[in-house]
Length: 449
Ligand SMILES: Cc1ncc(COP(=O)(O)O)c(C=O)c1O
Image (tube, rainbow, N blue to C red; front, side):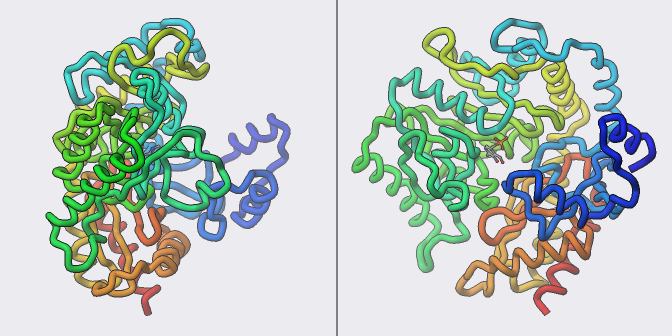
């Protein structure tokens, strides 16, 4: 942190000096000030909010890390991306907050039109803007209830759709998210298609049929009054699981047979990350609803619920004060245009394939890697105690993450119970990917010996 930023903190009333710049000091203060949520302070230090570029982030002690999380899939273009900063500078005098759902303004209308045009399907759509992924999911859920007058949903295990209200009802990726919190809406939960973990001895086809039959059976015995089937096109938090397209198509068909909507939650996988605007395009399904967030706001809170017109049965069925703030709507429009014009859809697919290949090579070296899978720049590595029985190597995975962060300076995150996920910013280079793989290799080697 340079003198300018110490000065800013002093002006705000905090006498912070270079001697305070240790991870230990700030982790202690954070522990005492912030509610415990998802921070793992045993692994991660305190980040320096004044430093960073591209995929390089720094902690308060000045240690530089190679960031493979992309701010949990938020920073499409990494830190301090010059073209984005230049655009942000040009819109600095745009009005800050017009409550976008209360009064019309030009940017959110243009952004809604743009999102309708880049998402699958030529049907008439409507868009509601939100400030988070969970709320983007809930905007769709409320619409599905409103339009069908049905209140039940189908969701999967694992699944992650957010931690608030209705979205939490759909989520099932960790008991900590759910224990003691009441179910906001009724959910019929069925297994997510997870080819790597299909029961031993079952053929791929038998397993796929089994998944679809389980869903059919659940609807027959639990009730088929379903507002929407909500599915991640590629399971993120649940363990980076890529479902087979024919099963996703089968789920879609079952939804339609029962008069339910199909909702693709693209909060993590959308926005071009997988090489297509929406990951559901890989499966050849046109969803009725799409929820987006994360990379849409370029680092600022911005989400969107996209659904079939008219979306709600009448006025005031849904709203949010902070939604489609004009500056952020302009920034989101710029991000979409820049992804398009700079060929990021193609390069995300190519770089993802490159990274998958490197990880597959790593898998040949390390027995503890049971599976490598992904789409574009959304990749998971699953750790097992041995390949034969596929027992989950949960503590080993945790140790590898800790080693990677603290010793190799590779900033990574877990997913599911035994998976490491990679959701880097789209601007990552192949050299940086090579370096990340080298560091991961070292972390694995050190932890298995
Ligand atoms: C698929 C999916 N849906 C919803 C959410 C919730 O988003 P938020 O944390 O912005 O509420 C997430 C967050 O990781 C996600 O991955």
